Length: 336
Ligand code: NAD
Ligand code: UD1
Image 1 (cartoon, rainbow, N blue to C red):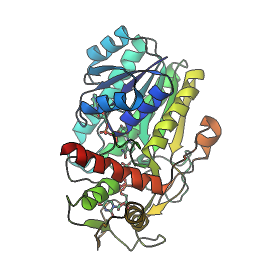
Image 2 (cartoon, helix red, strand yellow):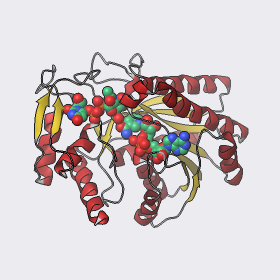
Image 3 (cartoon, helix red, strand yellow):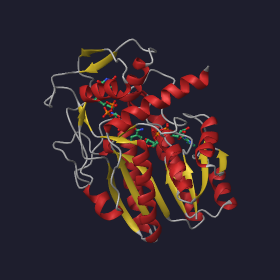
Image 4 (cartoon, helix red, strand yellow):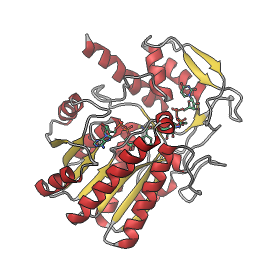
């Protein structure tokens, strides 16, 4: 059973490759290293002791995608490849539409030509726009609040139309909440080169003294301690959620959306306090004004994934904080 993983050298894709290989699937990865490094592929091999095929190609390139399908009998695709920086998407929307939507269209056309009709797509909780209540179920009305979110929403619509046109398709729209953490080996994880936008990568850079202080964006939200509340999911749990979704799409047809989150909300200060305690390290912070576009609180209703996929998160906030930091510590040792 061969699974094509687009964006498999990236943060979530690399963890999914590990879980796929450990579950006995054959894996074919395509990535253009826009936001990842070749060494990640070696690390996946090191963790699993298993080999897999890799193509350095742009998923927007239909000819390249056709070649991958010609050379491999692909049973299903997990489509991670895409750009994900919300702020950049506001400044460069066309870049986001071109890559996120363009890669999906090229991929779908190639899949159609090769009669591969099974795909799990990396969507995002961002398709819920500004949720008015939590927990957020999959039936919540969809909207987009920035071009990145619009690409996810449009791709969900496109995949819906694809299924309507041909009921042989089997499609899972996986709406991730906030992935953090890293593989327990410390070999793969998230370590952006630029100044991070997201909370956990910023915390780890402050803990590593690469940045002086964490800016907590607002403490006047309508939440338990006034700081923003999110549903953080350990990236290894998230990767396992893909295996559960894959099993489902391999044996059915249809299109379904699934929240991948824990159903629990943690505030910014709770994350900081847990991180400090679990890792016994200081994270200085200051309260700053709200970040434009942020909302007070949202977390998933994970019931559908539990009932239909048999998937439940196993790792808690302590593992998320511990593994995020362990990966950075190991990266530092490797740099010496
Ligand atoms: P990432 O940037 O670490 O991984 C994406 C990978 O895709 C990278 O390795 C990049 O080089 C590759 N890529 C991008 N465009 C490509 C193209 N045209 N052809 C080939 N490779 C290409 O991001 P991630 O955090 O692993 O996210 C994976 C997916 O999940 C993305 O689609 C993202 O939008 C979605 N998602 C991420 C989050 C999150 O917080 N990380 C939340 C919700 C959804
Ligand atoms: C962001 C994206 C969202 C995407 C999600 C997962 C925005 C506006 N939204 O969501 O589309 O799906 O990441 O990738 O970028 N915070 C701080 N200081 C920081 C960074 C964050 O206080 O330096 C706070 C935020 O205000 C928020 C929480 O931490 O309350 C989480 O922020 P972040 O990690 O950026 O994720 P989201 O805003 O939930």
